[in-house]
Length: 273
Image (tube, rainbow, N blue to C red; front, side, top):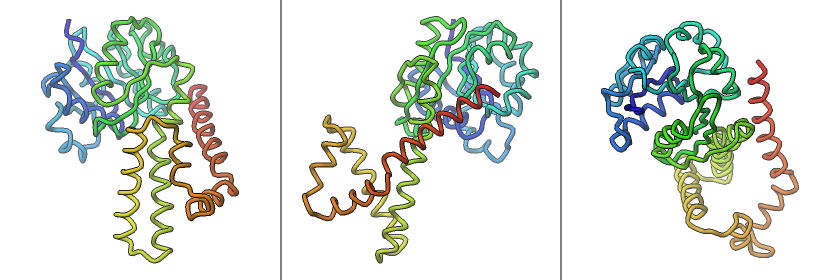
């Protein structure tokens, strides 16, 4: 059995991110260009994928190129899945399907794909393209420990991969999958503030990007809590304290918590259709 013959169905940002990450790290997994096929209907994206995978236009074409023991990575948008599933239901069989669709339960994926496939849910974030992603995986109907190992092998080569219960899938979507957008949102605000205080746009971009990069490196290398790390650079009565007091007064921490909860709740809404 060769579990690492993979068809990525859906293309789009996440599907293509996984394809590119597999193309980069695939040698470790036994996935080379001849073993990876991507269904991407948008021809403008074909060039960037061509070095990593075979490219076809439809999900059915992609799955048709798999052996019976191949793996399907299902990366269509949740709202598109109901239109895709009828076209491939009869050819999915009992293959392993790794669903990266937010909000759609594993049992719903299995049901809509004919009832025989084994399902593992995975929720990666876009930094998988750099080998620095975060992915949560959970076993669904019919999935074995070996199937989880396959998912762990694929996504573990792209960064941190954590097994979690399916009940936390909406939460990891809100924290990790959406998480980079929160950091980019912070960067947006810091750049705007830097320009407002007198820096050129170019200088502001360089300063903020390098600041966030350095802070992220410290978070990864220091075992102290973020709270303790923040305290170390917050002198009493100093500039950092003045800034954090404004953030506290504006309820920024509570707003972030509410934002994460809103993202989680939207995932739950998607799961209910």
